[in-house]
Image (cartoon, rainbow, N blue to C red; front, side, top):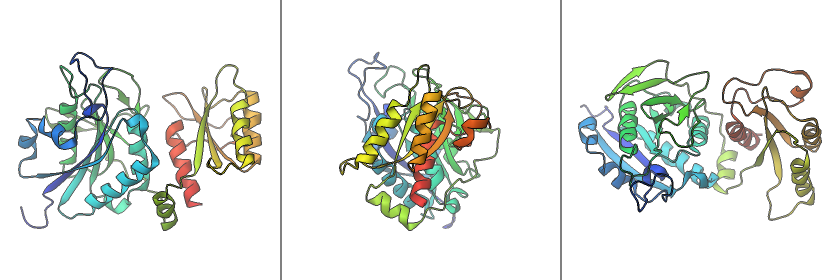
Length: 334
């Protein structure tokens, strides 16, 4: 290879089930997540050196947590470390090992904040496992191999997630199963590609960078862990405005130890429909200066215009959790 050809692949560990361990190898639910370091995890994949060939691995343990405990501070650190590695001329891409529970949120966050110039040239591939590393038949090693195969693909770019041989784009991926190994789906959009025996079968174009025009103000707020407070409320049978009103009362009280509420995402039923009592409370929140965004609990489809409910802007097809990330970043840029 000449000096201008990238020769390294960065693998960043954050913990999760893929790094989990249980006393009983037949226990696939009672394990402790984030017990195995990323270097040890990669060492348990015997086929990895053959796949890498002359490509050198660079590993870094960015965090070691159960992904249900993901924080804005960890996301910011991950953003900075991914940016660092993508900026190196000899690094061809980044693989991130992550827990499944919040993988879709992390993927979308990186899709939004990473530089379009970096993402248009190099891939960021998140991968995971539904069985701990200690399981009789862990799925992590194969998922790592598949993620590396995608990251080594010369044309690959953008933020993606790889699980059970399927490649999903960050904007559309969501976890849809609590237990099965094939736990992710991309809804109406469908997968980007499949990895079959180490070879990529591409179905769609790589995801276009979705980076927002992140400015210095966002970096300063993120560094100081000053993320706007945005909560999610859900519509359901008998839904009331009590939770929204409680949040508004807390906002009005101005408690110094509680961040002020700045946004609400409502996970509506069906086409983003909202119970009349909850709708009235959300209108009160809107009048008090809280931004309200309407999403749907449904896994497929997107919220379409529907009269009075359109007093609240829709989530542009994003799930409630991704709409929350989108609103947090928008408030930081305001």
